[in-house]
Image (tube, rainbow, N blue to C red):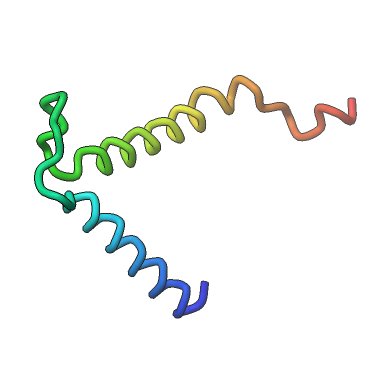
Length: 73
């Protein structure tokens, strides 16, 4: 990854995280208690993705993986 791409990625990341904490037009309508926590959606999405990848790697992959010479036999 070039230096320009890293800077662009960092800038987009900062903008996305900042916009998660900023709600244009005043306060948004809250339906559930967790919607009052700033940045909850971003944190929940990140942790959900992390645990889904961990589950896939540790549980699903061993169930469906085959030995290296499986198709040669």
